[in-house]
Image (cartoon, rainbow, N blue to C red):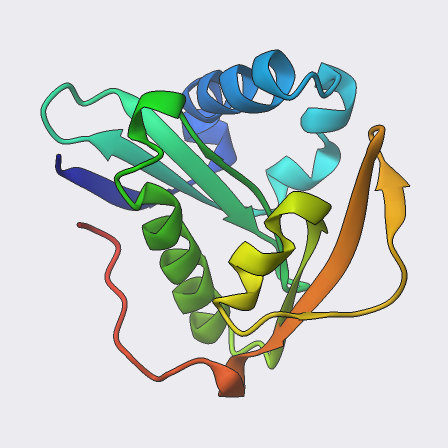
Length: 153
């Protein structure tokens, strides 16, 4: 399975980004729409992943200029294709382009180990958000290998 990742602007790609995020977060994870779609979308750097054969959107993620990574979503049929890993690498590449020193994410507890694989460490106490326990995790960009990441796969 092949896919492409590209940076998109919210104004141009909102329907495609919303489609993926609604299926993953609103339908599967039962997060209310009013929480899922926030004002930060307008200011974030977004990634859109599309299946190379069907050209359909299959994944997304965003990063803010503050270093906050969020809204990483991959449609269920594509979750075993390492799409999430490519999204994460691409978001970290954007962080480097922005000359950020550090990035952070508010991780669901069940994903803490996943983010540790990218050298994220836990920071602070567990808290509740949208009815889910979360852990703030942060990562110094110096701790990430200086490999080149490209926005296509």
